[in-house]
Length: 245
Ligand SMILES: C[S@@+](CC[C@H](N)C(=O)[O-])C[C@H]1O[C@@H](n2cnc3c(N)ncnc32)[C@H](O)[C@@H]1O
Image (cartoon, rainbow, N blue to C red; front, top):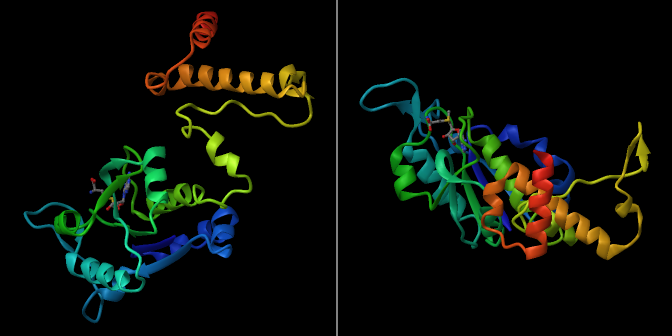
């Protein structure tokens, strides 16, 4: 996969992209991440990329010309085509489903905003997707772009040590993930559930599945509504939830 990120602050990406899973995925040739400074396509001595808001109001808006010019030039840098994703609080809420959808693409171009955001014509005539990472406003699209790239890259086959990791995680099967334990078996009097030490794989799977259900019912009942449970699981869950209250 090829990812191109258009930003006014390319320096912000060093660090997160130079460590751990993303770095390994880059080194293994699973993904290439290319940073482009929008200002390089802004005209004039000062390469100004923003301007005042028509109709009045506070703040500045990112001008359309440099964004269109940068995106068109970046598109020509490689033959692959794919979504042009604009980061905005007004976009589709980023979630597991969208992560998997984007991870299947050969290429992503990500537009990262600043100030009051982009001129509306960028939204209407350039972006193919508008994505929000949550109902709050950050100072710029760089952190949202990093969140999106991290989630997408870990979905690429080979990016994680074990291919199972990505399949067992929260949301991948529609549920939150069961709690994990590691050694020691007892810490300050708190014991690891005996079933996990039993070596009995079927029992461990059953325990995990039930913990997934319980945690999801307690914390994200909205997810459970879309999930079909066996009669036995329903009974077990309602007993557990009754116990909790
Ligand atoms: C200060 S914000 C602009 C907020 C905009 N005036 C509004 O009220 O919706 C500047 C840039 O940060 C990015 N941004 C901020 N919060 C975001 C979020 N929750 N999801 C995605 N991008 C976000 C966008 O690229 C946006 O153009």
